[in-house]
Image (cartoon, rainbow, N blue to C red; front, side):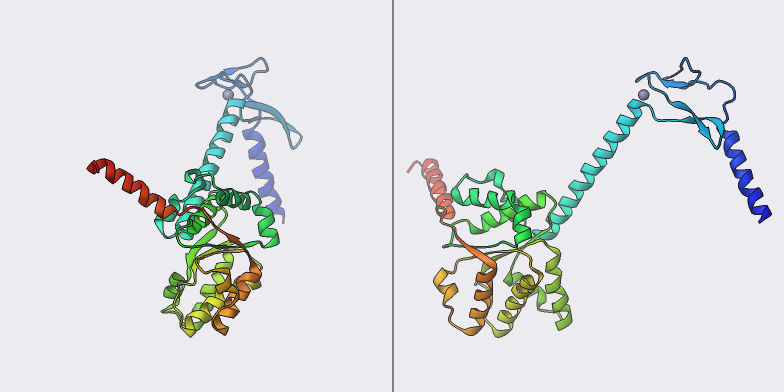
Amino acid sequence: MKSENGGAGHVIGAMLERFREKEPPIPGENEYIGENGLLFCSVCRTPKQCRVNMLGQPAVVPCICQCEKERLEKEKKRQEAEELQRRIQRLKANGIQEKHLLDWRFDVAENTRDIQRARKYIENWQKVKAENLGLLLWGSVGTGKSFIAACIANALLEQSVPVLMTNFSKILNQMGGMYSDERYQYIASFSHYPLLIIDDLGIERNTEYALEQVYAVIDERYKAGLPVIITTNLTMEELRQPEDVAHARIYSRVLEMCTPVQITGEDRRQKIGSRKQTVVKEVLDL
Ligand SMILES: [Zn+2]
């Protein structure tokens, strides 16, 4: 006990000695001695040393001048911004595996009614999440359903919200080599994403096994109370009156979770086609 106190007293004594004001300080680069006899920064003319009371003893300690403080704050902000960018890059690499989808963003979208609605979904994301508002983007081939879904995915990823955009063919391929408990883990892992986007419902394999997994993924989302956006070429009639019980089970759950939004957008592929035709006509002078 005695020796411990002696040891602590020794450490405190050494500290007090270290900060005791002795001879005047020697100014370094960009420093000068102020009227109070302590070091000042010659750039911002604020103190780099302060007199304090240390355990009842007067002491002189270093302090951070204004310009150094500003530099440190700026550096911290820069590091935070870099860390955020790295996080967004990781989220994108993880959430959007098909590289072309990364280019489908609001900033390259035409300002159609469909796009305006999709923007609203993002603007109200907190409410969407809290109220678990899923969307079923339906409409014929080439209306830009996947484009709209990818715009939503990219916009949320840019806000560092984890999104997974995938489709059932991919999910079923992944599950192919898994044992049943691994499959369960895999399906449960989707709950880490505040938003799950499943592109092109209805084109996956039609086997009993496949339909069971499709249902399992959707049902897991339902139980987790998390939103899902689904795109499909199926008509509302096909969704409401499916051919068999297995499909009926899936679609009725989808319709329970997602509000159907018909995507009418003019046929984008046709438009790209006709633009190419125009260019070809110019090139060939037809
Ligand atoms: Zn300074």
